[in-house]
Length: 66
Image (cartoon, one colour):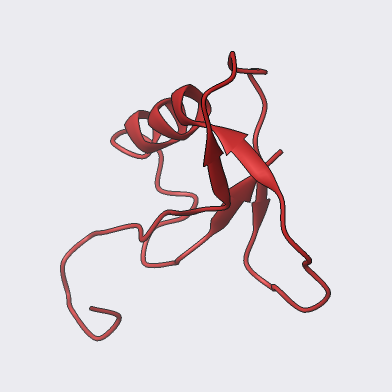
């Protein structure tokens, strides 16, 4: 997929939880030292929808967490 010319973002959420959204998302591309985390499903959905109009993470695979 990384070699594809298709515009895409590979969103990698940390552990998904069923809690209310907090409205902010931490985004990591360098996972060195990352030791877990969690994120509400709703925050993941909001992040994914934002990617439809924002190319900041285009052709990357960010990990999102709280």
